[in-house]
Length: 132
Image (cartoon, rainbow, N blue to C red; front, side, top):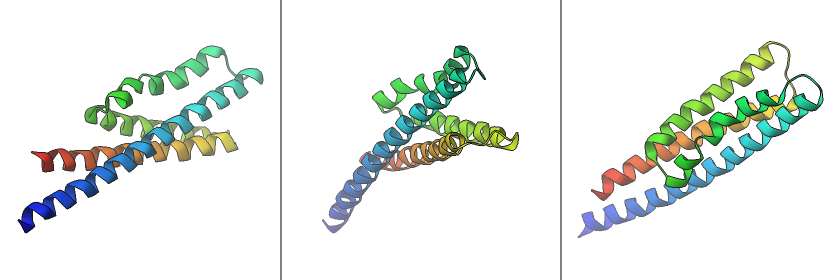
């Protein structure tokens, strides 16, 4: 009986952790999307880039929206990788002397997205293994 209660308590804790990670993924996703749009519009209005550059920057992130809505674990693994790519993109922009407040905010948001998606995958995997 005690073993069963322990498993139920662990399952509840994992459910809370998964819910918290999911909220963090949505928050970081939204923040990164808003920052990418703001940065793209800034460069567009400053005549540094064309409208296609904005689309190229946000399209990979927008394509992951069904993954978030359907709560696919495998998609969140790829979302982790995408977050890391955005971090690397920001680091390259900073290394070329293009560091602005928006770029640093994008790096932070992309890093948060990668970490939150990774945590979601990890805790969701534990919860799924616990349920079976």
